[in-house]
Each structure stands twice: as C-alpha cells, then as structure tokens.
Image (cartoon, rainbow, N blue to C red; front, side, top):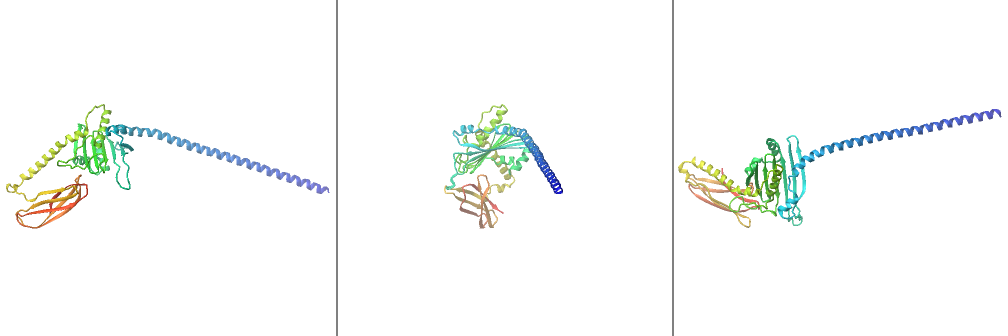
Length: 376
C-alpha cells in the first residue's frame, strides 16, 4: 500500500508538469502569432503608406506638368470665335462647339488647335435620309519656322500650301503679312489664311447647302460671289482679328470683300498670262499656218435643267487624209477633277473635210464642265 501511494503521487506530479509545459507552449505560440500578425500589419501599413506617397508624388508631378500644357493650349483656344460671337454673325443660335483639341509638337515647336462646330438646328433623319448635319472644322497652327511648317504640312495633307493657293478660286491679302484664299465645291467650302506666325483654316461641310449656295460655276456669268453670310470667311476673319488684338493692332475690314475685289484682278492676270503664252506659240508658226483653223472647232458642252449633257462640235481636217480620228472627252467637277471620260471615233476623213459630231449623256450633280482633245 505504501508503494502504491508513492506511485500515485509520482504520477500526479508528472501529469501536472506535462500540463504546465503544454500550457506554456500554447501561450508562447499564441504570443508568437500575435507578434507575427502585428509585424505583418506594420509591414502592410508601410507598403500602403509608400504606395500612397508614390501616388501623391505622381499626382503632384501631373499637376505641375498639366498647367504648362494647358497654358500653351489656351493661347490658341482663346483665338477661336465664341459661341456668342457666332450668334451675332448668324443673327440666331445655330453653331455650337462639340469638340476642341490641342496638340504640341515640341521637336518642331508647332502647336495646333482644332475645333468642330455643329449645326444644332438640324437633326439627321435616318428614314428619309433628308439631312446630313452641317459641320464646320476650324484649325489654327502656330509655328516659328516656315521650313518646319512646310514639312509638317506635307505630313498631314496631300497638297502643299503653294498648290492650294495656285488652285484657289479667290485669293487676297488683308495686310502685307497675311495671304488668304477661298475655294469651294458642291459639298462645302474652305478659307485659309497664312501669316508670319499662324495658319488659320476653316472648312464647312454643307452637303445640302443650307447655309450658303455653293453650286455656282467658277467661270462665266453664273460664277459664285461670296458675301457676309459665307461662314468660312467670317470665322477666319474673326480669328485673324483676335490675333491682331493680341498685337494691339486695330483693323476694320471684311475678308470676303477683299477676296471678291481681287477676283477680277486675278482673272485678268491669268487671262494675260494665257494670251502671252498663246501669242508666243503663234509667233513660232509660219505665217501660212496662222490663219488656218484645223482640228476641233465650235465645241460646246451644255447641261440642261434635267441633268442631260449635250456635246457638239466639228473637226476640220488639214491636207492629209486620215482613216480615223479619236476624240477624248473629259467631264470635270467643280474642282476640275475628272469624274468621267468618253471617246468618239471619226472615220474616213478626206483632205480639208469637216466632220461634225453630236451626242448626249447624263452625269451626277457634281458635273461642272467638259473638255475635248484629239487622242494620239
């Protein structure tokens, strides 16, 4: 019995010791987990704080950069005519800005602002396809070097500035530092002016000619005449005057009047150049050939009110008999682009014989005139 009692006491002591060890290990494990969690939380907090600091730094950099870009862009945007000013020009609310964008090419130091105006009085009718909403696109380019401007222009357009002025319907200069041009088609019109610092361009897309009638001819008595209602010239005029205000220059002119007044002068100049060229060619011919009128004579190409085009004329042969003559007729639009061509064969033409020709065709509304030549 004595031995049994000692064994029980010894077993109890061992069990108690094991429980203490277990409880100690559990407490130590729990303590370690708390420390790990605490350390992880601190680490996370540092990461988050670092990310916040980096984001704040990036935002600060953006804030520092944005005003510089915005400040430069605003200089050109402020040159655009305001919507209130457009209301004064049109005597009612018609045009609203729907988009304005600015870019800066730092390499060549060329800044560009483009804006789009929409006619808010028109709604597109998808059922009857009645209206194609008129829009106006405005572009202002500021440059420092003409050479860089020419390279930049070649990249964004297919025609050089020189070619645009050569093919213009009207040209004129409001001042010594400004050259302007105007051109049009049945789809709309464009006015462009270039100064020693700026290129200003306004283009209107007005398919149904709701704001101005651009379906007049560029020659003869029915040629187009622009007035104060033509929007591209008015917008460019407003921008030019805003540029002049910055330079504290006072001006009082209407761009359309300058362009129109120069039309007769330009036509006379071109006619004189043509006459000089013709005279030069005639002087190179022998005297015996000057009075002869061989080839195509009395050619006419007329379009009636129903869109039917009548082509007529005659071919006067010289002293050489010909088996066949091929005449090529080119039909041109208002931009002098070829929209259709046809050929006419004249057979068995004797010496000094005259053969007449007559024909009809029908072409779309963009047709303006036609030309004819003998095809080799």
